[in-house]
Length: 134
Image (cartoon, rainbow, N blue to C red; front, side, top):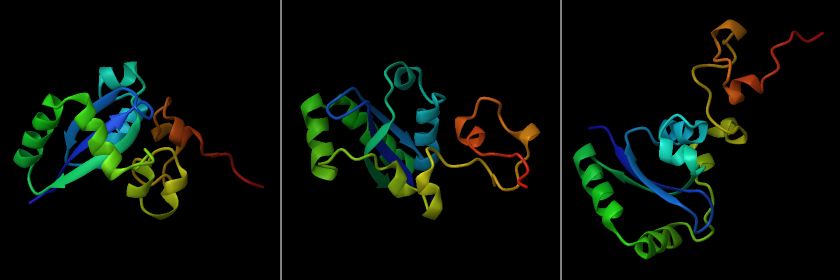
């Protein structure tokens, strides 16, 4: 069975919080960072992954998300502090190897991508220099 995740994002330490559920934590966090996931997270610049919890199935994850959304703010802050006292962005820890230096993971294989196939407004892919080197 596929794992599911409940996660908390923050705008900054003790800032605005967002609770969500997903089956692909890396991709969903990237969507929030790119402004493609939620109008709320886009509006308030909520992009820092500060807490997550893995569940064996989506039903359990949805139940936990619903539970956390009903909590008082102070309980959510305690949950984050116990798991991540420094309020580090945990997103990079999820990425494998050299991709950790990038702001978000590539879609597909960027080494095989060509300029016409790339999204025009994708800052990650646009950060590559596709000019031929001499």
